[in-house]
Every structure is written in structure tokens, then in C-alpha cells.
Length: 209
Image (cartoon, rainbow, N blue to C red; front, side):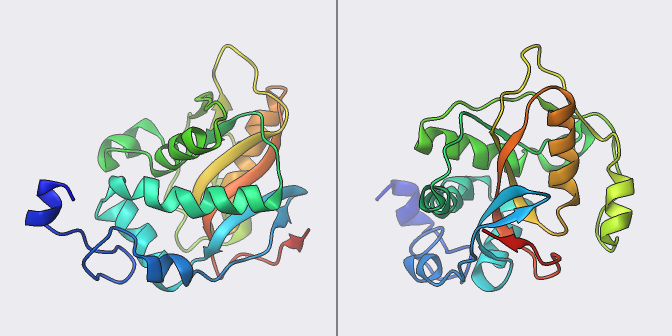
């Protein structure tokens, strides 16, 4: 045990118990969701946005506790392996530079970095958020789609590959993921799977593969 852990014992982001940043009870209590498809693209999620997982994601993003990325990426990597999807590389949903300065880190990028390390696949940082958009909270799916039009571009010199894995923290309506996927497609690549920590209860029904 590290000295700092002895002085300041870690608390679980899901249940607030001492002992670990993400305890075994919360990890094993996840409500798994089957692999679905969003706009014809496989959607892999760790679980539903509820209970301890929701608490942990909120702590990760807003408290903030960026060190939770490693613990939260582990079950997401397991869900991807169980789905049997082979991805040549990973990318992530970017934040606008202004939002990145406010938060101090991109939660999707940290998750993608951990997944890249665990899965042994390259991480590509080609997607950029080129237009700041108003907050999505409270918007309908149609309003979110309009809000995100033209928000993303692939800016790397190298074109994106086919079958890229796109990482984000939560899929609420799918509008953000689909807008980012469109930007990848416009640059000659394609998304092989969406990878998210949680699927919101408000997400419209997705096809189950």
C-alpha cells in the first residue's frame, strides 16, 4: 500500500466506502447491457447509467477524479473483448478547447488511453471539436443533432482507418457519437464500434446484436 493511501485511504467513487477507488462490490454489481447498434454501428457499454456506476462517472468528470480512468476502463475493456470485436485503433470524442481548459482533462481521452494500453491497439488523436456548442442537457434527440452539426472534424494529416473504435463516457441519445462518426466518415474512415462506460436510461431503444 502506498504511503499516501495509508494517510488518506481511497474511497470508492461508487459507494463511498474506504479501501479502493472502485470497490469489488460496485464492480461486480454492474447491470450489464447487451451489445446493441446505434445507426448501424455496434454500441458496447459497461452498464446502465444508474446507481454506483453513475456516481462513479459523475465523480470522475465533475469532482474531478481523473485517476478513476484506469479503474473504469477495465470493465469497458472486458465488455469489448466479450463482444469479440477487433478494432485496428481507438479514438475518442474530443472536447472543445474552451471546455478542456475549464475541466482540465478530457474524460473520454483518458479512458481511450487506458483502453489502448490494455488492449494493445494504437490511439489516434485525429478528431477535433471545431465548434463550441451549447450544453446538451435538456435537449431532445433532434435538438442535439442540430446542435452538433459541424461540431467535429478529422484534422490529422493521416486519414482515419476503417473500423476505428470511438470512446466516450456516456451515450445519452447517441447524437454526439453519431456526429463524430459522420466527421470520420467524411474523411474517408469509418467507426467499427462505439465504446462507452454507460448507456443512459433516456437513450432511445437500440437494436440488439
